[in-house]
Length: 326
Length: 154
Image 1: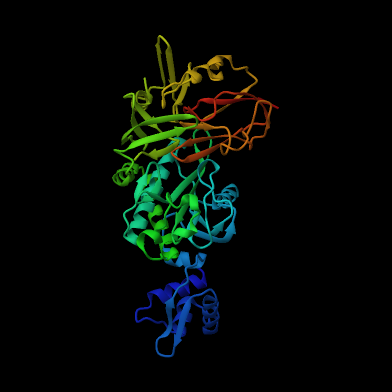
Image 2: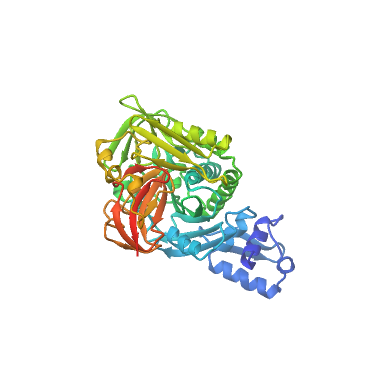
């Protein structure tokens, strides 16, 4: 952990509200002057740190910023995800950054956040609006020992992890739309795009890209999205501290990734099914120029959607655009 | 026969260490082979499979139907799908296709995307050469191991 991360961690866990410069210096193994200099740096970044003669340094307020050190300090220990965190002020797309790291042979678990993306994207090149500091746009590099066909388990796992983190941090009850969109009151709040590099029988790497509308207000959405998209702030009525939410998501992702890798996908899938509101609904699916209409009956063991068509056939859906009919 | 049945057969093959399975009916033939080291089964069809979706008339007249595996010229290589999914020839509907017949490719050239449940798999040519055939139509379902392109190595 870096010095800044250690200082923030110590300030947050200070029992009587403060920690003295001497204690900090001793804990971290640097001089008191160095502690003072680091505290000044943190203040420059927007952390409100009070220095009182009796209580020492106290953390009064934190900026809604994503800082790699801060995220590491909040995250604590995880098995794989978040061992290395990098934050970019602006990039084309965090998936692009991770792809470069993957090709350079970087170990799995690295997470790249961007405060804004110029080319945030969804499925099939669709644009993902990612305004500065309003959401969480990040990607995770994984190198699972799975066959290409099994990587759909990871998109299911990502959706359940995201569901738990949002629920825990905001108290909201999101819904999962098959396969892994997160909706609140029927409006999209988060999307997951997974990119895979694989050979015929093994996975080289998987890039899990997550986009989450956190603190956008209604008028910050483009007009054409206002009826179909929403943010956690709009739904919960208050702003959300993104660093706290981000680390909650990474912790849950780490947990579900471990479950998938240990062959316990069935447990993840049960949880997913519990929150998947697509089941029991009338749906339309567009695949290329083909349209399938029917009733979403159930999920099979791989997470594919089984749809009873108008003609009475049971079709196994693994892709395409799914629309929930009213 | 649908995908469930095939999976059931594969599972039975695994359980009983059966390495080869062949079934022939009037208009359908399937052959399954497993590697000896427990690797995943290779599926070979004598007909373009349309198992995940109902077959459409177009699918049956797709080039794949006229190019049975046996007829592959020995000097041409096939780019195969590593997973069941939907085949996309371009990164977005508005974009140009990654490759066309006649395109020169390198091992790292992306030739298409296979999607399954929002997992987008960029398929690379894995060989240097020239694309001689596109075997699947855009946005159609493909099976594990199904040939997607033919490439004449340079």
